[in-house]
Image (cartoon, rainbow, N blue to C red; front, top):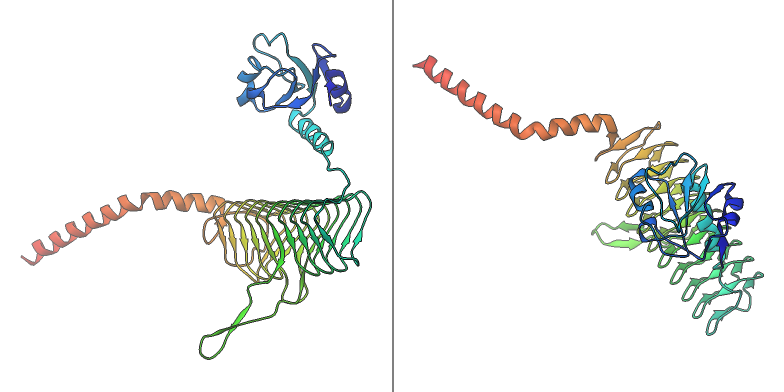
Length: 349
C-alpha cells in the first residue's frame, strides 16, 4: 500500500516540506534509504545520512534545519517528535500485515475448545480441551495450548510457543517464538540421603493484558497459586521467571534476566540484561537495575543499583575507582613493608 507525504503529514499532524505527492510503499533506515522508502531522523548522530539518503520521504523534528543541500528527490515531514511518530507509523504498517482469519490444516482443535471470531490458527497447532481463544487472535504454526488455558482478544502467539494447562494469557499480548509458559517450577526436596524428590507444581501462570514476551523465555507455573506477569510488562528474549514470582505493572527487563522463586518485582522497574534476582525478596517500584547486577536482598526504596551485590550506582562508581587503584596500592604496601623491615633491622643492629 502506498502513502503520500500529505497523507503521512495528516496522520501525524505534521508539515510537508517539499512534494506533498511524493509516495512511499516501504520503510527503511535513513542510511539504507531507497526510492519509494520512508525513513526518519531523530538522533543528530545520523544527520549526515540525510544529505545522501535515497529515501523519498523522511520524518524529522520540527526543529531540524539542514546545514547543506538535501537531495532533490527527498521530501520532509516535520513533526513534534520524529521517533514517536515513526513508531506510530510502524505500528500502523504492522497492523496492515495481520494474518488472514483461517484455520490451516493439519491442526488439532479439541471439540470442547472455544474459538472466537476472526482467529488465525496456523498449521500443526494443538488446541486442547476447554481452551478458550478470544476474538482476533493469531495462533501461529506449531503452537501448543494445553487444556483449560485461555488467550485474550487481539493476542499474537508466535510459532513453537507452548502454553501449559490452566495458564491464562491476557488481551493484546505478544508472545514470541519458542517461549514456554507454565513449565514446572524448580521444586525439589532432598531426603536424609540427599536424594531429591519432585514437589508437584499445581499452580498456573497468569499473564495480564498488553504484555510482550520475547523469544525463548521460560515462565514457570506456581507451586500453588499463580505466577503473575501484570499489565503492560515487557520481557526481552531468553529470560527466566521462576515459580510464584509476581512482576508488577509496566516493568521491563532486558535479555537473560533471571528471577528466582517467589520474588516480587514492583511497578515500573527497569532491569538490565543478565541481572540475577534472588528468591523470596521484593524490589521497590521505579527501581532501576544496571546490567549484570545481582540482587540478593530486598530493595526497600527506588534507586539505581549496580554491581554484585548491587549497591547505589554512585557508590559503585566510587568503589570501582578504588578497585582500579588496588594493584598500585598493593605495590605501595609491599614497598612500605620492605622499608619498615629494613628500619627494624637497622635499629636492632
